[in-house]
Image (tube, helix red, strand yellow):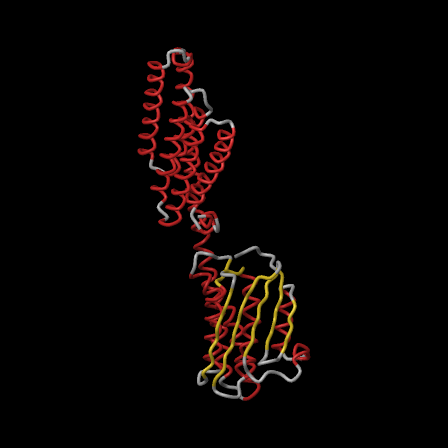
Length: 384
Protein backbone atom coordinates (compact mmCIF):
# COMPACT_ATOMS: atom_id res chain seq x y z
CA UNK A 1 0.00 0.00 0.00
CA UNK A 2 2.98 2.29 0.24
CA UNK A 3 2.79 2.43 -3.58
CA UNK A 4 -0.33 4.54 -3.13
CA UNK A 5 1.80 7.44 -1.89
CA UNK A 6 4.30 7.11 -4.78
CA UNK A 7 4.01 8.97 -8.09
CA UNK A 8 1.15 11.17 -6.88
CA UNK A 9 2.02 13.62 -9.65
CA UNK A 10 0.29 11.32 -12.09
CA UNK A 11 -3.07 11.58 -10.26
CA UNK A 12 -5.67 14.33 -10.21
CA UNK A 13 -5.70 17.03 -7.52
CA UNK A 14 -8.58 15.68 -5.42
CA UNK A 15 -7.13 12.17 -5.35
CA UNK A 16 -3.74 13.50 -4.22
CA UNK A 17 -5.43 15.58 -1.50
CA UNK A 18 -7.42 12.57 -0.27
CA UNK A 19 -4.24 10.48 -0.10
CA UNK A 20 -2.62 13.22 1.97
CA UNK A 21 -5.63 13.42 4.30
CA UNK A 22 -5.29 9.69 4.85
CA UNK A 23 -1.57 9.96 5.49
CA UNK A 24 -1.94 12.78 8.02
CA UNK A 25 -4.79 11.01 9.83
CA UNK A 26 -2.85 7.73 9.97
CA UNK A 27 0.24 9.44 11.42
CA UNK A 28 -1.81 11.38 14.01
CA UNK A 29 -3.65 8.25 15.16
CA UNK A 30 -0.44 6.21 15.32
CA UNK A 31 1.13 8.84 17.56
CA UNK A 32 -2.02 9.00 19.70
CA UNK A 33 -2.10 5.20 19.90
CA UNK A 34 1.48 5.09 21.21
CA UNK A 35 0.80 7.83 23.78
CA UNK A 36 -2.47 6.27 25.01
CA UNK A 37 -0.85 2.83 25.12
CA UNK A 38 2.01 4.22 27.22
CA UNK A 39 -0.47 5.94 29.56
CA UNK A 40 -2.50 2.72 29.76
CA UNK A 41 -5.60 4.31 28.24
CA UNK A 42 -6.35 1.13 26.36
CA UNK A 43 -9.88 2.00 25.28
CA UNK A 44 -8.60 5.10 23.49
CA UNK A 45 -5.71 3.12 21.99
CA UNK A 46 -8.12 0.47 20.69
CA UNK A 47 -10.22 3.11 18.91
CA UNK A 48 -7.13 4.74 17.39
CA UNK A 49 -5.94 1.33 16.22
CA UNK A 50 -9.31 0.81 14.54
CA UNK A 51 -8.90 4.16 12.74
CA UNK A 52 -5.42 3.23 11.45
CA UNK A 53 -6.62 -0.14 10.10
CA UNK A 54 -9.75 1.33 8.48
CA UNK A 55 -7.78 4.19 6.90
CA UNK A 56 -5.24 1.74 5.48
CA UNK A 57 -8.15 -0.22 4.01
CA UNK A 58 -9.49 3.01 2.51
CA UNK A 59 -6.09 3.79 0.98
CA UNK A 60 -5.95 0.31 -0.52
CA UNK A 61 -9.44 0.76 -1.98
CA UNK A 62 -8.53 4.13 -3.48
CA UNK A 63 -5.31 2.71 -4.93
CA UNK A 64 -7.00 -0.43 -6.27
CA UNK A 65 -10.22 1.03 -7.70
CA UNK A 66 -9.49 4.78 -7.90
CA UNK A 67 -13.04 5.56 -6.69
CA UNK A 68 -12.64 8.85 -4.88
CA UNK A 69 -16.20 9.24 -3.50
CA UNK A 70 -16.34 5.78 -1.89
CA UNK A 71 -12.89 6.25 -0.40
CA UNK A 72 -13.90 9.71 0.87
CA UNK A 73 -16.92 8.19 2.61
CA UNK A 74 -14.74 5.48 4.14
CA UNK A 75 -12.37 8.16 5.40
CA UNK A 76 -15.15 10.34 6.85
CA UNK A 77 -17.05 7.44 8.44
CA UNK A 78 -13.88 6.02 10.02
CA UNK A 79 -12.80 9.35 11.47
CA UNK A 80 -16.35 10.27 12.57
CA UNK A 81 -16.94 6.95 14.33
CA UNK A 82 -13.65 7.22 16.22
CA UNK A 83 -14.09 10.88 17.18
CA UNK A 84 -17.65 10.52 18.47
CA UNK A 85 -16.71 7.37 20.37
CA UNK A 86 -13.75 9.11 22.01
CA UNK A 87 -15.91 12.11 22.87
CA UNK A 88 -18.57 9.97 24.51
CA UNK A 89 -16.11 7.72 26.39
CA UNK A 90 -14.16 10.71 27.67
CA UNK A 91 -17.30 12.70 28.55
CA UNK A 92 -16.43 15.51 26.11
CA UNK A 93 -13.15 16.13 27.97
CA UNK A 94 -11.02 15.57 24.87
CA UNK A 95 -9.53 17.53 21.99
CA UNK A 96 -11.63 15.38 19.65
CA UNK A 97 -14.40 17.98 20.02
CA UNK A 98 -12.26 20.42 18.02
CA UNK A 99 -11.84 17.93 15.16
CA UNK A 100 -15.60 17.34 15.06
CA UNK A 101 -16.03 21.07 14.38
CA UNK A 102 -13.60 20.85 11.45
CA UNK A 103 -14.63 17.48 10.01
CA UNK A 104 -17.66 18.76 8.03
CA UNK A 105 -15.33 21.03 6.05
CA UNK A 106 -13.53 18.01 4.59
CA UNK A 107 -16.81 16.74 3.12
CA UNK A 108 -17.09 19.89 0.99
CA UNK A 109 -13.98 18.93 -0.97
CA UNK A 110 -14.88 15.39 -1.96
CA UNK A 111 -18.69 15.28 -1.92
CA UNK A 112 -21.51 17.26 -3.48
CA UNK A 113 -22.94 20.24 -1.57
CA UNK A 114 -26.16 18.34 -0.89
CA UNK A 115 -24.27 15.38 0.58
CA UNK A 116 -22.03 17.68 2.61
CA UNK A 117 -24.99 19.58 4.09
CA UNK A 118 -26.70 16.30 4.96
CA UNK A 119 -23.62 14.97 6.74
CA UNK A 120 -23.12 18.26 8.58
CA UNK A 121 -26.72 18.16 9.81
CA UNK A 122 -26.15 14.56 10.87
CA UNK A 123 -23.05 15.64 12.85
CA UNK A 124 -25.04 18.33 14.68
CA UNK A 125 -27.85 15.91 15.52
CA UNK A 126 -25.40 13.24 16.71
CA UNK A 127 -23.47 15.76 18.81
CA UNK A 128 -26.70 17.01 20.39
CA UNK A 129 -27.79 13.42 21.09
CA UNK A 130 -24.48 12.60 22.80
CA UNK A 131 -24.76 15.77 24.88
CA UNK A 132 -28.26 14.80 25.90
CA UNK A 133 -27.09 11.32 26.92
CA UNK A 134 -24.29 12.96 28.89
CA UNK A 135 -26.89 15.15 30.57
CA UNK A 136 -29.00 12.10 31.50
CA UNK A 137 -26.34 9.64 32.61
CA UNK A 138 -23.52 11.87 33.83
CA UNK A 139 -25.15 14.85 35.56
CA UNK A 140 -21.89 15.64 37.33
CA UNK A 141 -20.36 16.83 34.03
CA UNK A 142 -20.47 20.65 34.20
CA UNK A 143 -20.58 20.95 30.41
CA UNK A 144 -23.96 19.20 30.23
CA UNK A 145 -25.51 21.84 32.52
CA UNK A 146 -23.71 24.89 31.17
CA UNK A 147 -26.13 26.11 28.52
CA UNK A 148 -23.97 29.15 27.74
CA UNK A 149 -21.01 26.89 26.95
CA UNK A 150 -23.19 24.62 24.82
CA UNK A 151 -24.60 27.61 22.95
CA UNK A 152 -21.07 28.93 22.35
CA UNK A 153 -19.97 25.52 21.10
CA UNK A 154 -22.87 25.27 18.64
CA UNK A 155 -22.44 28.89 17.56
CA UNK A 156 -18.73 28.31 16.92
CA UNK A 157 -19.47 25.21 14.88
CA UNK A 158 -21.98 27.08 12.69
CA UNK A 159 -19.63 30.03 12.16
CA UNK A 160 -16.74 27.71 11.23
CA UNK A 161 -18.90 25.83 8.73
CA UNK A 162 -20.40 28.96 7.14
CA UNK A 163 -17.01 30.60 6.69
CA UNK A 164 -15.62 27.30 5.45
CA UNK A 165 -18.49 27.09 2.96
CA UNK A 166 -17.80 30.60 1.67
CA UNK A 167 -14.08 29.89 1.44
CA UNK A 168 -14.78 26.64 -0.38
CA UNK A 169 -16.92 28.32 -3.04
CA UNK A 170 -14.34 31.07 -3.46
CA UNK A 171 -11.53 28.51 -3.91
CA UNK A 172 -13.72 26.36 -6.18
CA UNK A 173 -14.35 29.34 -8.46
CA UNK A 174 -10.62 30.14 -8.53
CA UNK A 175 -9.76 26.50 -9.20
CA UNK A 176 -12.24 26.29 -12.08
CA UNK A 177 -10.75 29.43 -13.65
CA UNK A 178 -7.22 28.07 -13.28
CA UNK A 179 -8.29 24.67 -14.63
CA UNK A 180 -9.88 26.30 -17.69
CA UNK A 181 -6.73 28.37 -18.22
CA UNK A 182 -4.51 25.30 -17.90
CA UNK A 183 -6.65 23.37 -20.39
CA UNK A 184 -6.39 26.22 -22.86
CA UNK A 185 -2.60 26.37 -22.42
CA UNK A 186 -2.36 22.59 -22.82
CA UNK A 187 -4.39 22.81 -26.03
CA UNK A 188 -2.13 25.56 -27.37
CA UNK A 189 1.00 23.66 -26.38
CA UNK A 190 -0.32 20.51 -28.07
CA UNK A 191 -0.99 22.54 -31.21
CA UNK A 192 2.55 23.97 -31.09
CA UNK A 193 4.10 20.50 -30.89
CA UNK A 194 1.80 19.31 -33.67
CA UNK A 195 2.89 22.14 -35.95
CA UNK A 196 6.56 21.68 -35.09
CA UNK A 197 6.22 17.99 -35.94
CA UNK A 198 4.51 18.79 -39.22
CA UNK A 199 7.15 21.37 -40.14
CA UNK A 200 9.98 18.96 -39.34
CA UNK A 201 8.31 16.23 -41.38
CA UNK A 202 7.92 18.66 -44.26
CA UNK A 203 11.63 19.52 -44.12
CA UNK A 204 12.44 15.81 -43.91
CA UNK A 205 10.26 15.11 -46.96
CA UNK A 206 11.92 17.89 -48.96
CA UNK A 207 15.34 16.49 -48.10
CA UNK A 208 14.11 13.03 -49.06
CA UNK A 209 12.91 14.28 -52.44
CA UNK A 210 16.21 16.02 -52.98
CA UNK A 211 18.15 12.87 -52.10
CA UNK A 212 16.55 11.08 -55.08
CA UNK A 213 18.31 13.50 -57.40
CA UNK A 214 21.70 12.63 -55.91
CA UNK A 215 23.91 9.57 -56.02
CA UNK A 216 26.60 7.89 -53.96
CA UNK A 217 28.02 9.63 -50.92
CA UNK A 218 25.92 12.76 -51.34
CA UNK A 219 22.70 10.78 -51.38
CA UNK A 220 23.78 8.80 -48.32
CA UNK A 221 24.54 11.95 -46.32
CA UNK A 222 21.20 13.45 -47.34
CA UNK A 223 19.34 10.34 -46.10
CA UNK A 224 21.22 10.55 -42.79
CA UNK A 225 20.17 14.17 -42.42
CA UNK A 226 16.58 13.21 -43.18
CA UNK A 227 16.60 10.59 -40.39
CA UNK A 228 18.18 13.02 -37.93
CA UNK A 229 15.35 15.47 -38.48
CA UNK A 230 12.79 12.64 -38.28
CA UNK A 231 14.21 11.54 -34.89
CA UNK A 232 13.38 14.99 -33.48
CA UNK A 233 9.95 15.02 -35.16
CA UNK A 234 9.07 11.77 -33.35
CA UNK A 235 9.61 13.53 -30.00
CA UNK A 236 7.13 16.28 -30.85
CA UNK A 237 4.66 13.73 -32.22
CA UNK A 238 4.72 11.82 -28.93
CA UNK A 239 4.27 15.05 -26.98
CA UNK A 240 1.16 16.26 -28.77
CA UNK A 241 -0.42 12.79 -28.65
CA UNK A 242 -0.13 12.59 -24.86
CA UNK A 243 -1.06 14.83 -21.93
CA UNK A 244 2.46 15.00 -20.52
CA UNK A 245 4.34 17.77 -22.33
CA UNK A 246 7.51 17.59 -20.24
CA UNK A 247 8.46 13.90 -20.43
CA UNK A 248 8.78 11.20 -23.08
CA UNK A 249 8.34 7.46 -22.64
CA UNK A 250 11.86 6.15 -23.31
CA UNK A 251 11.03 2.66 -24.59
CA UNK A 252 8.15 3.80 -26.79
CA UNK A 253 10.27 6.51 -28.38
CA UNK A 254 13.24 4.24 -29.01
CA UNK A 255 10.97 1.61 -30.60
CA UNK A 256 9.60 4.20 -33.02
CA UNK A 257 13.08 5.50 -33.82
CA UNK A 258 14.56 2.04 -34.36
CA UNK A 259 11.64 1.09 -36.62
CA UNK A 260 12.34 4.18 -38.74
CA UNK A 261 16.06 3.45 -39.06
CA UNK A 262 15.47 -0.25 -39.77
CA UNK A 263 13.07 0.59 -42.59
CA UNK A 264 15.73 2.84 -44.12
CA UNK A 265 18.84 0.66 -43.89
CA UNK A 266 17.84 -2.92 -43.11
CA UNK A 267 14.44 -3.59 -44.64
CA UNK A 268 15.72 -6.81 -46.22
CA UNK A 269 17.76 -7.99 -43.24
CA UNK A 270 16.68 -9.84 -40.11
CA UNK A 271 17.93 -7.41 -37.48
CA UNK A 272 16.32 -7.60 -34.04
CA UNK A 273 16.45 -4.77 -31.52
CA UNK A 274 15.67 -5.13 -27.81
CA UNK A 275 15.18 -2.14 -25.55
CA UNK A 276 15.53 -2.26 -21.77
CA UNK A 277 15.02 0.63 -19.36
CA UNK A 278 14.78 1.14 -15.61
CA UNK A 279 13.42 4.64 -16.23
CA UNK A 280 10.00 4.98 -17.80
CA UNK A 281 10.02 8.69 -18.67
CA UNK A 282 12.76 11.11 -19.62
CA UNK A 283 12.67 14.92 -19.94
CA UNK A 284 12.01 16.43 -23.36
CA UNK A 285 15.42 18.13 -23.78
CA UNK A 286 17.27 15.02 -22.69
CA UNK A 287 15.28 12.76 -24.99
CA UNK A 288 16.02 14.92 -28.05
CA UNK A 289 19.76 14.56 -27.39
CA UNK A 290 19.46 10.82 -26.80
CA UNK A 291 17.42 10.45 -29.99
CA UNK A 292 20.12 12.14 -32.06
CA UNK A 293 22.80 9.98 -30.46
CA UNK A 294 20.97 6.65 -30.80
CA UNK A 295 20.12 7.53 -34.39
CA UNK A 296 23.86 7.67 -35.12
CA UNK A 297 24.50 4.38 -33.26
CA UNK A 298 21.77 2.57 -35.18
CA UNK A 299 22.82 3.99 -38.53
CA UNK A 300 26.42 2.95 -37.95
CA UNK A 301 25.46 -0.60 -36.93
CA UNK A 302 23.02 -1.18 -39.77
CA UNK A 303 25.44 0.11 -42.38
CA UNK A 304 28.73 -1.40 -41.24
CA UNK A 305 28.32 -3.97 -38.43
CA UNK A 306 26.48 -6.86 -40.04
CA UNK A 307 28.11 -8.63 -42.96
CA UNK A 308 25.38 -11.29 -42.83
CA UNK A 309 21.64 -10.78 -43.20
CA UNK A 310 20.93 -11.16 -39.48
CA UNK A 311 22.05 -9.53 -36.26
CA UNK A 312 20.99 -8.22 -32.90
CA UNK A 313 21.15 -4.82 -31.22
CA UNK A 314 20.54 -4.21 -27.52
CA UNK A 315 19.80 -0.78 -26.03
CA UNK A 316 19.50 -0.25 -22.29
CA UNK A 317 19.15 2.65 -19.88
CA UNK A 318 19.99 2.45 -16.18
CA UNK A 319 20.37 4.79 -13.25
CA UNK A 320 23.69 4.32 -11.46
CA UNK A 321 24.87 6.36 -8.45
CA UNK A 322 23.07 9.57 -9.34
CA UNK A 323 23.81 9.27 -13.05
CA UNK A 324 22.28 7.67 -16.12
CA UNK A 325 24.02 4.93 -18.04
CA UNK A 326 22.98 4.35 -21.65
CA UNK A 327 24.44 1.17 -23.13
CA UNK A 328 24.24 0.42 -26.85
CA UNK A 329 25.74 -2.78 -28.24
CA UNK A 330 25.49 -4.88 -31.38
CA UNK A 331 26.82 -8.36 -32.15
CA UNK A 332 28.37 -7.34 -35.45
CA UNK A 333 31.97 -7.54 -36.60
CA UNK A 334 33.11 -4.80 -34.21
CA UNK A 335 35.93 -2.34 -34.74
CA UNK A 336 39.67 -2.93 -34.87
CA UNK A 337 40.52 0.13 -32.78
CA UNK A 338 37.42 1.17 -30.79
CA UNK A 339 39.45 3.58 -28.65
CA UNK A 340 40.06 5.75 -31.73
CA UNK A 341 36.50 5.59 -33.05
CA UNK A 342 35.32 8.72 -31.24
CA UNK A 343 38.23 10.69 -32.70
CA UNK A 344 36.97 10.40 -36.27
CA UNK A 345 36.07 13.60 -38.09
CA UNK A 346 32.79 12.31 -39.56
CA UNK A 347 29.59 14.26 -38.90
CA UNK A 348 28.03 11.29 -37.07
CA UNK A 349 30.89 11.05 -34.56
CA UNK A 350 30.83 14.83 -34.11
CA UNK A 351 27.11 14.66 -33.30
CA UNK A 352 27.69 11.85 -30.78
CA UNK A 353 30.39 13.86 -28.99
CA UNK A 354 28.33 17.06 -29.14
CA UNK A 355 25.18 15.50 -27.69
CA UNK A 356 27.23 13.81 -24.95
CA UNK A 357 28.69 17.21 -24.07
CA UNK A 358 25.23 18.79 -23.97
CA UNK A 359 24.10 16.01 -21.65
CA UNK A 360 27.16 16.77 -19.47
CA UNK A 361 28.25 13.20 -20.00
CA UNK A 362 30.98 11.03 -21.48
CA UNK A 363 31.07 8.37 -24.19
CA UNK A 364 33.27 5.29 -24.21
CA UNK A 365 33.57 2.48 -26.74
CA UNK A 366 34.69 -1.14 -26.66
CA UNK A 367 34.67 -4.05 -29.10
CA UNK A 368 34.54 -7.58 -27.75
CA UNK A 369 31.61 -9.41 -29.32
CA UNK A 370 30.63 -6.52 -31.53
CA UNK A 371 30.67 -2.76 -30.95
CA UNK A 372 29.57 -1.25 -27.67
CA UNK A 373 28.92 2.37 -26.67
CA UNK A 374 28.50 3.46 -23.05
CA UNK A 375 27.17 6.96 -22.36
CA UNK A 376 27.20 8.26 -18.80
CA UNK A 377 25.43 11.51 -18.05
CA UNK A 378 24.13 13.28 -14.99
CA UNK A 379 20.66 12.75 -13.54
CA UNK A 380 19.68 16.37 -13.02
CA UNK A 381 15.99 16.08 -13.81
CA UNK A 382 14.74 13.85 -10.93
CA UNK A 383 12.17 12.27 -13.22
CA UNK A 384 11.20 8.65 -13.01
